[in-house]
Amino acid sequence: MNTPSAVLSGTGLFKSYGMTRALAGVDIVVTAGESLAVMGPSGSGKSTLLHCLAGIERPDSGEVLLDGERSEMGRIDQLREPARSELRRTAFGFVFQSGQLLPELPADENVALPLMLGGTPRRAAVEQARQWFGPLGLQGLEARRPGQLSGGQAQRVAIARALVGKPKVIFADEPTGALDQATGMEVVHLLTDVSRRQGAALVLVTHDANVARWCDRTVQVRDGRLAEAHTESEAGAGTGTGAEANAGYRR
Image 1 (tube, one colour):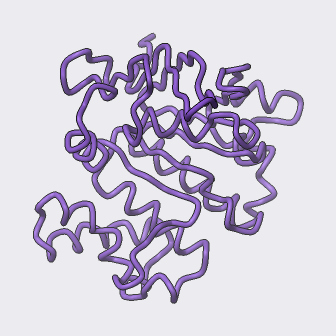
Image 2 (cartoon, one colour):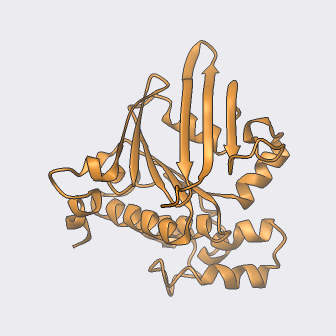
Image 3 (cartoon, helix red, strand yellow):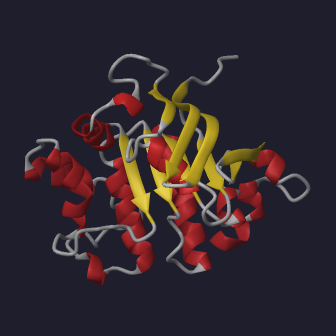
């Protein structure tokens, strides 16, 4: 039986803001195709952990490796900002609570934006972006601007944008936080399912246990440390797996 390879790992991660310690020696590994929920109360360090793993911020100490490489490009924590920005655009995808779509662009160009920033001609980028609209339930909405979309539709557009570049890792920070419960469950089911089918790892920050149950594994962050970890099947013990426990949200 093959052991899944580590696509992203953090070792001995420390991060402080002034006198406040956000991370206090975190070790974490995310394997290819895995969905990982990061939970914890407000101020626990969960978003800081995501930011360090994604190269948005540098840890004060420790290392962040992509594909287990300690080469110059594999050590995310040692890259300068231009290289980290390039990495975020080419190897990572992002879904945030608000979606962060550009209001002046139609939905298809919002999805195509990472490709165009990478040098793909507009027509080719938009054509590639539109291929995601059918699978994500967005067909017919290609020309709508973000202000003409519902909250759930806007998050689906954000998911398409995160996936269009075929990233190794998708980072989602409270992706259902601005949605009602039923819409949020639909979005997180779609996000975990499509990332798994694309073979991308998913790191999802949430405070909602119902959201976390859709993931393969959950870690708890408290006071900058990983307090506990369990698999999705363990989380659903006695009530079915996480997906089964939330099946009612899809009906």
